[in-house]
Image (tube, rainbow, N blue to C red):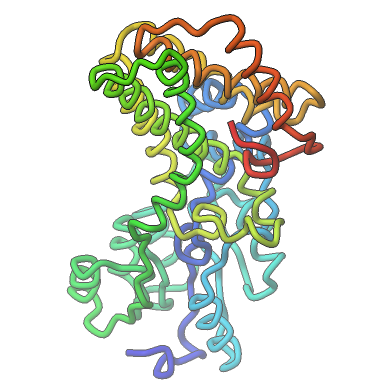
Length: 375
């Protein structure tokens, strides 16, 4: 049955948080926010995970606090909540995120009568959430809005179901439990969204790998193919670093009038996809570079390391950021030499370094490779 047929006197509308009320994952939000603050966050996260997922959520939440006002909310879910409240119905936020996160979101929106999250070592997801809801609201005393396979256990005891962004197979499984389930429109990232995140227009910088070949007038096919190999390797690794930078800058991008529309900041691409894209693109680029020779691989490794340092720390240091950008441009020239075996002269390197330095205008506290020249 649709929400218009629900009885506000008998049902509480229960709403999940991650990828339901918000178009993002609070755990990954906290992870990337924490990494932006502390470079060793991944190591600390692995140590904390040994104490359980709830401990990890709490620890990351302590380090990388999220401003609930900047989260990408799902307008269809908000509209459904407001319709239910207008009819006098009660609404509860029940999430596997921490209690602190649940309270922060509920306090910001002002739409919930109660908010419950994971605490005291209990991860409020799946069967645990189902038991909690039955104990709190009674058998079939709630309708539930969710999105994940873990929610099937919840829907088994619910009076009504609403799914968010479901596939056809997911809809069928929910309807096997509740025949008249409501399905909010699916919105999935397309190829253009992923390409936008990779920023192929920025690959133009990588034509610098062809400079040693052109300077030496070595225009034969073999040399050109070697340079193309370096171009592809650098482009893939560069895309990985652009995505990494966007994930680290989620909060700052959402506060910007234009950058808030970027794929990850806006919620068009799920954070888990971006989290996987970084190592996949990076490893693909590294593999191609290794096929081009150990020298090219070594230069690419240095480039990747310096770029990550730039994203995590160096871009916030006056003058250091400019010097870093100049070094990164020069590394592309060296990569061309490594790939083709054509040595770059000291005159070429000196000229290029100073030239690239002049292309790096100071942008105080830049938070993205696009606020100043990107690495």
